Length: 147
Image 1 (cartoon, rainbow, N blue to C red):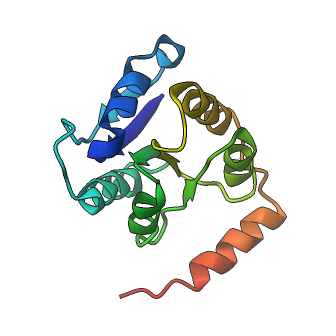
Image 2 (cartoon, rainbow, N blue to C red):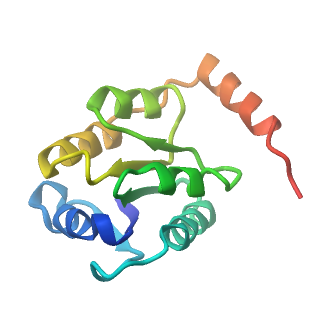
């Protein structure tokens, strides 16, 4: 499974640990940056990841920053991106089951590595429920202003 992943400087360490963790050895992470703990502008990485997820139909992405708020706001500016900021397994499960989230966002300053890994695993292992939830996603998509 291929997953696009990106972070800002505040979450760089967590991103690297997630990529290297053996629990995710079956995942082909495509690291879109950043490359160090030097300060960067998080919207650039949210935009880069969002464009990749949209271009690669059916793919998923993971964004990490200090709080997760900036990344989720930036990613959700793209029609077709459903970025969910999750702080628990329940949020992760519901974001996928009910909202078919294609981007998971994590706040590295509020989660330890074990929590982040558990949230990722839950999110990846949850299926979209469809039915009434698809109808609601269609309503969301129909309300997005298009150029």
